[in-house]
Image (tube, rainbow, N blue to C red; front, top):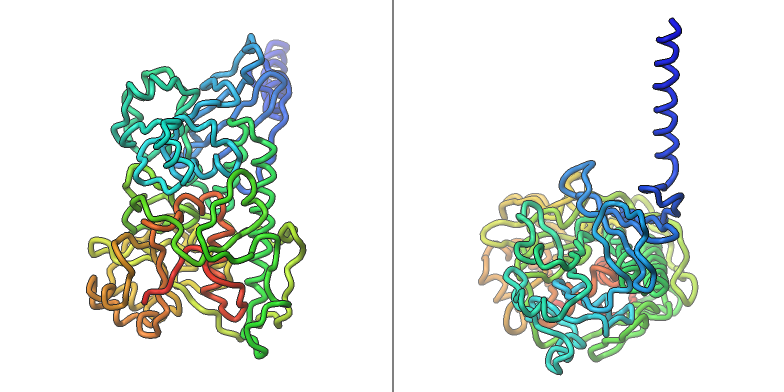
Length: 478
């Protein structure tokens, strides 16, 4: 009996010790850490310790597994005697080779352009400072993302490589053998547009730009929530489109007629609109997936699944944009009023890839206070459907939007020449079809970390009665 009691006491002691270890953020002898609170991101965990910061990225394709773990140690500090397991990255990263256009753009917004040492897939990057840097020899062109120039990368001696991971990709080939940390940019697998945007805080930490990243994210969050509230108040107005009292006039909704490209954190102040094409070079990927919160340009292949992850609803509270609160002079929408509806994408190789109801596209439409035919669907990725299925379920949608890559202006006749069945769509008949020319407009570069820009476009298309100005990305088919 005494022996049994001793065994029970020993087991209890072990259990209590285990529970005590899990109740803190202690890690491999580092002591207690301070967990960075994330508002939206679900795949990212960051814990600050006295000697380092440990960043854990959950595997989006395998529940309960870790995709990668990083141990960030400041360059001017000695390496801790006891390091936790993970890839050590000395910060700030002063020389990065980046494989994705969205992260190149984010570096500009964070004021870290001098820290970009090289890029892959240059032809898909519509970012001015990158093009100019390569032309001037300050930024290296490291070739195709699927077959990068390893020798050139080695010559650069970068502190890190930023690459988007793919499911069942088989790894990164020779890049894994050159002793350079690989930062797996899995932000595109997050559950919502705002969750993806929050990853800028991780990238800011890597670049030594945490303050700038936190500031920019706060503005994006505030802007997004303010726009969402504005959309919720949208209703047909009898007094015309005058917007002195009804638009979300913040510090950045001013319209400009030319291409707008502010650097550093200036874009944090608002959603400056451009009425013309913003870029004349580069090549967009073909559409065909639900590219919602900002698919990125990588090696030219567009993500066909998983890019839009299941998401919950965004919080309804929050502060307004930097310059003040949102004015809504219109009456609140009642349950008896019909909301305008939206359909996205078009046929690709005979298949229409429809964003699932729980995708970030579905969430954006909901946050723009629009109706979506698949709103009750719980898929986070895209649904492969025939045209007949889409026509039957969503052919009556008021607004039709998609990404487009081609030469010249898109017309209704040109669109119909792709597939005559498009003529049966309500939006086609009523001339309410809109597209993003991704060869000209930096859509993929911007919306990943500025989902408020995209939400504003959705609101403009779904609520023209609000009269909040011109779209930033979408233009009407002529």
